[in-house]
Image (cartoon, rainbow, N blue to C red; front, top):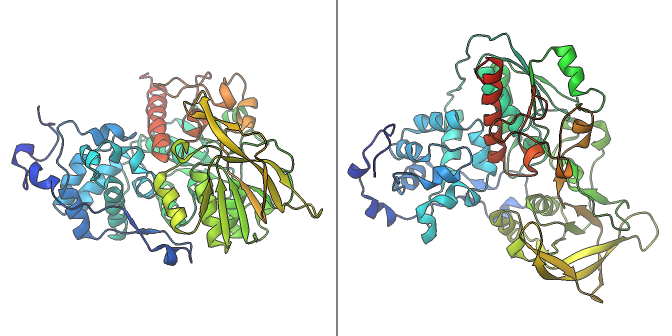
Length: 485
């Protein structure tokens, strides 16, 4: 096996040897004590020390063709970065991550490494996979704390102008890549502040907002302009923007923000919340919200959360921090079929949440007639044959209905793209559930000047997956504008 030419070391001369590295003790991604973290909204993680980071990086055996890099959607240069961390050269490692990942400090906080890079580590088979997520986060935060305000070199102006719709991870990535290449970039965001999902979807105890705002400030320094409180597809269409702003290309990074419905009786009762409304009102101050969401949110003592993904977990953990005594998540399959992060689910259980498997609501009830939910009629389920997703289909058990009393219900059953974007854009093709059709190698839509990436193409997915698709689209946009495509 040959060594990669761009690595600053010879694997055969590594000290300690690979055999010795495998025996070293792992330093996992760690969290504050549940009894401590449940009393505040601060980030739950415990930051690595420089000594811990160097020790953990030393465990890497530097595979000739690193499977961790293949498992990373962004293809971070993990092996080389970890070698620099091992040497204590944290700023070089941070620069390496930054060249491949536009949002390393964010991915290090929110991306479940057990589903991507860490899952590819050969040591993971022994339960000792490298803490790749924690190391990326460590060097990103080290760079920020050290005062090294990293701004990329900006190419001379191309005279081309690009509109980016949506200031979430995909939109921010396209904006940065294209601005670096010399294009003028304007980003539109429906919420009052830029950040999209990163600000208005992910709870503060997982991602402090200052980390996102620090990134936004960097992008502004690069000349990127942000226009907030502007929901493209409603009062203004993409074609309106192309005409009035004279955009040469447009990128759609609008995500998947429309919540799925259960379509059961009682779904519109008072104190039944969609997950987005609940999370933003729970996690953000009123001045960061639209006027319609600024009323203070108070909840009762018994909370029911419906769903099984990471959003459901975010809701149960937020409800616990709001003072609920009993928070139960109801999921219609078993834990084996749950789509969310096992780590985040474990954190929620540590904090006091209860998860009821193989059960689902059939009706949300107002038993005292005041217009608000006070109970749910549930039904037990059993698993049948696999459905189109490959998971076994939940089948109701006849006669197994039962009643649970609740003060509030939060629905966290999934998201789909905003149909106003596609319906308001001439000749823009979509397919199932309104997902935008794109060319897989370019992100180009059925409109040659419009590109798309992120959750509005894939459906809800990880932040690093959105970044990866946005990088593909940004490169294709640049090549098209410069006549290279």
